[in-house]
Image (tube, rainbow, N blue to C red):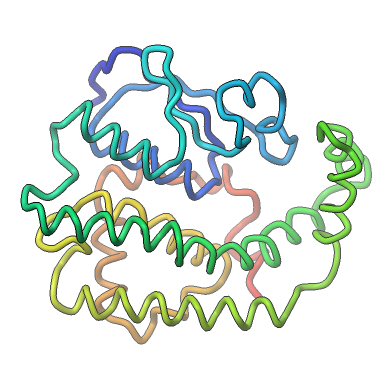
Length: 254
């Protein structure tokens, strides 16, 4: 049941892991919000109107009572401070510190490790499925078409197998660290579900759609944790529906 929260607006893309992260926080808190969907494939996040809100040109951006808040990890802490019930931060200060370390781990380690797969598997699959006219329209929509042409040349090229091998090694190490934590605690920050779990679960969701879920098949703690998060009602509310994914679950399996 959504509850009013003043004026909350979210500028997002359905199949963006960082947008998913913020939608998951909003859903856990039962907050009502107004949607502004930006099509990243049409480069709507690089248009002047959006850049006035978020000069970095990334999604998501939360606007609360007219004030923009940027960066998904910052947005989620902001939401938990302004709308404290139900709390998504541990009451214990040491556990809150653990939570922030795991959120930083997602920002600094796990997200960069997932990114090569997103580009080499998902975006290449998207480009392969587009018609010549759709590709031309996509390039024309970029505020700097010459930059779009460079992006397109890379996106249409072969999979960078060296980059993917390095990414798989980094993902295995990252999930091994999660496994060690989850062998001792049900949630990443300790005994309670928190912003740490919200930060990391969209990364594993993306890995499923990249065909990389084998990375945690030998990690029972991670597997059980992922199942617990997926079973929460907020996950079903916040996750992209199949038709909102850029590609289907099998198109980008290596």
